[in-house]
Image (cartoon, rainbow, N blue to C red; front, top):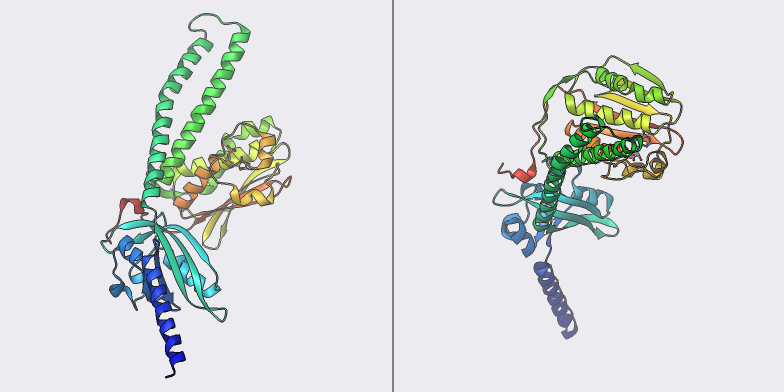
Length: 380
Ligand code: ADP
């Protein structure tokens, strides 16, 4: 071997060592898989976050170790494995915060993103980088707990204020003038709005943290939808809206009666609230493996570019602000969570000035999975 090539190969070896040192000392957990998702590299941070040692993982299928779960305890890897996605599309995938199994059987929240290892533009494997989010999750949990405590504490004085207000308005403590009645009525309406906001907020928190107990039974969603429309018919009549009911006979679906009523009441009351003229309606039909319940209207609609954000907490479409100024934007966040708990889906079709169609797809299933909250931990 010539002196030149000896120097070149020496440089290569030292470059490789340098890369290995960088890889090992990265603060983020990191591992590399080949096309079959077999682990070929595993760094020290991955060892310290997840507990698995490099020597135990090399050459093994990554799903034997990590197994990412979503917030409902469902395996992400079974549905949309971010590594596989990255390899198939030769593209970077951001999986967000998921729960990873540790060697001791606990679950750790990790923020995951994956990038392809490219050779001639084709992925021959992928790199997953992840960071431990335990602290952030804990801060999040404390923030939620604090907000819930404050909301609970606000409820008690509010109930008392409303009670005394009713006594004054009812003339129990003497006559009041017309002006006083008008002003106190406004106070009462605002207290009521505040109570609804607090209740919605507490509902969202409970649903998100999995603390709401669901009571499963067979439901006839058609008659529940019709009932919601009947209950809210006076509000529709007040605006001279036509009410349309198109119910196909549908099989029962498993659901929680009160929660499903809450969902339908929210959709129907929105349909009426955001419609000035024309009609509102409900429709049910079977759609493959699902029963679909549609609530539609000929109202202000939602701009197409805002539809994806509907259902985010406190988000209100630009069309809504012109129609009703004071609502919270929490109703659909609750609706979406409840539908998710039913293994269902909410679809929205709309456009500015074109009315809206909200469709709930609920699976026709005989058995219901027991949902597990990953935050309760798992040793399976
Ligand atoms: P809100 O209390 O603001 O009505 P929701 O969470 O029920 O809150 O709805 C969120 C937003 O979705 C509303 O502010 C509105 O922009 C939009 N939206 C919901 N339903 C309709 C509808 N039927 N027509 C038009 N916009 C709607």
